[in-house]
Length: 244
Image (cartoon, rainbow, N blue to C red; front, side):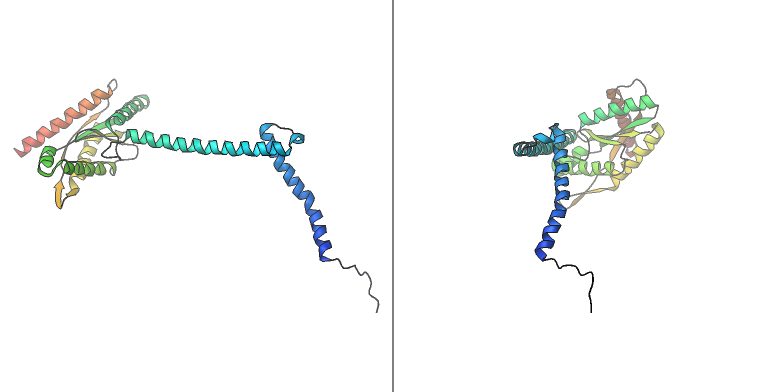
C-alpha cells in the first residue's frame, strides 16, 4: 500500500518558534504605534525615541496625571467650600441670608428680563420666645429645623428657601404671581403646622405667620424683603385680633 503526499512531522519546538516569528511583526507594529502615540504628544521625532527619551516621557506623563488628579481634588474642595459658605449653620438644607439675597437678586433680574412673575414669601415663627423660655433654645432650634424641612420638601427645585435671621425664613417662588404666592404661602404654613417636633419626650407644635410679595419692576432686593415682611406682620396682627 502506497501512501502519497505525506508531510514531515514538525517538533513542538519548531511549532513554537514558527508562531513566535509570526507574532513578532504584529507586536513590533503595536509597539511602534504606541511609541508614535506617545511621541506625538510632545512632537518628538520617532527616530529620537531613545530609552532615555522613553523614560523621560513616561515620567512626564505620570507627573501630568498627578497634576490632573490634584486639580480635580482642588475643584471638588472648592465646590464643597462654596456650598458651605452658602449654607445656614443650623439648617444646611437652606441658604443663609447672604446667599438668599444673592439668589433673590438673580431671580429679580430673570423675572424682569423674561417678563415672568416671581414672588417672595416671608415666614415668622409664632411664640418662639415662649418655646425658648419654656424648653430652652435648643428646643427652639429643633423647631426651626422642622420648619425648614417642611419648606424644602414642599417647594419645587427651582424655588429657593433661606433663613433671613432668627426665626424668620423666606421662600422665592419663580413664575408665581401675587395670587398664587398667597395660596402657596397658606399651603406651606399648613404643612409646617401639621408637623410635630419631638423634644425630650414632649411634642412641640409650631405655627407661623406669613406674608407674600410679588416682584415689581424697579424694586431692590431690600425693598422686596421689606414688603414681604410688612405683609407678614399684617397677617400676624389679623391672627392676634382673631384670637382676641
